[in-house]
Each structure stands twice: as structure tokens, then as C-alpha cells.
Length: 190
Image 1 (spheres, rainbow, N blue to C red):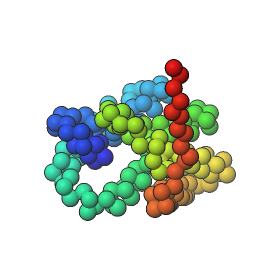
Image 2 (spheres, rainbow, N blue to C red):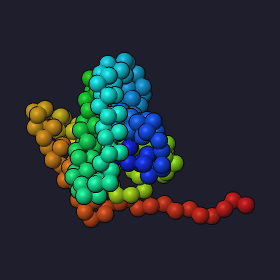
Image 3 (cartoon, rainbow, N blue to C red):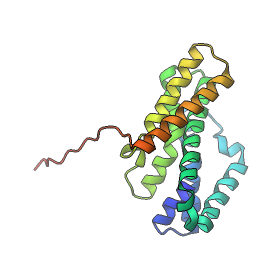
Image 4 (tube, rainbow, N blue to C red):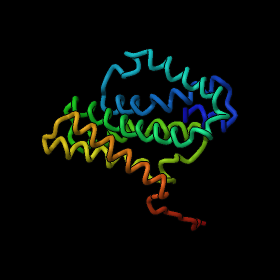
């Protein structure tokens, strides 16, 4: 939905909406799989994902005018998606026996890359680099996931704790507008 809405803010046609929705939803996992050498790429084995994403993107064009009424729900679902994709990315890298730093990066790539691609294709500075904490939430979830695994916790409990902590962190970041310090450099090299 965020991809479709971003395409709509750029006055894209329905093909553009479908492409941006697809890249936003499945781009992170695609990048992760390519970087990790994990073939075949996930969505190629599950074409129903493609249909679902494109239908959701096109359906968003029908309900977009009502989205401002659902902003809070949308942000909550987005936070849950961020945590879920981050954990999926970590699990994929673990199954491929990558070291912890790669597991963390794979989780983050999965969690945030779709949004980065969306923003780049829509000619915007990626939101994750300049607004409230988002990528930091993904990093937190990935590190927490590995720490709890290292403590030999039950996998279901790890998932539950990561979802709860990651969701709470993201919601608090939104509520209180937490963000990292920004770097601004304006000097010219004439």
C-alpha cells in the first residue's frame, strides 16, 4: 500500500502503481536473496505473492481517499511488517550459515530495502535515512533476535518478544518523533 500511495503522489499510471507496489513489497527480500546467493529468489517460487501485491496496490487506488482515516492502523501494520521482514531476513541468513553480522545485515536489507527502492524510484530521499527511527528499529530487532537465540530461548518466544519490542519501539519513535542526529554539509568546493 505504501508503494501504491507513493506512486499516486507522483501521478503515476496504473502500471507505475503496480511496479512501485511490487518493488516496495518484494524488493527487500529480492535484494537479500541476491546478496546472499539464495536462489531461486523467494517470490519466483510463490507467484501468488506477485498477484497479491499487485492486487493490493491497485486496490489501494480505490481506497486512497479514505487512507487518512486509517493512518494509525496503516502505521501499525507497517511497523509489524518491518519487524516481520527483518526477522525473515535473519532466518534466511541463519539457514545459510552466515555469521552474525551478515545475519543482521540480511535482516535489515529485507526490512528496509523495499522502502528505499520505492523512494528512489519515486525520486525522493529515502524516508529511512531522514525521518523518525525506522532502520534503527530493524537493527534493534535483528540484534535482539540474535541475542535471544544466543541465550537459547524458545524460537516462538523469541519471535513474540521481538515482535512486541520492535513494534513498541517503532510506535514510540513515531509518537515522540525520535530520530537520529542529522548531518548537514553545505560548504562548496569551488
